[in-house]
Length: 158
Image (cartoon, rainbow, N blue to C red):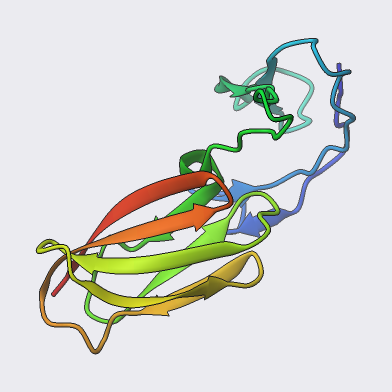
């Protein structure tokens, strides 16, 4: 069990409703073969008045970290769908690509719904953009791939 005591500074907002707080916790993954890891969180905000008036608590939904299992060739399967975020999904220009894990050799291809390849490239770093401003309005599929893994995302260009 990890407990944070003291005060957290807001990441955004001023402490009222809608304020976002973040906290980083260092941990070491269990040994291989242990199985999935579930992380539970409860936030309790107290106002230090000596009574419970105004105090709040919130239980977060559990987060499951699935253990990667090596395939028959000894390579670990990384699910790209869980490791990549593409936003906004409706755009007039570029889309943002954010990777949640270190992914080597990450590339992309942008296809129209007719199957035509419009653009392609590589992703370097945790955050980048894919420029769609030169494409006509319509629906496009962005195929992300790394080694033997692929994920496809739908984007609408207006």
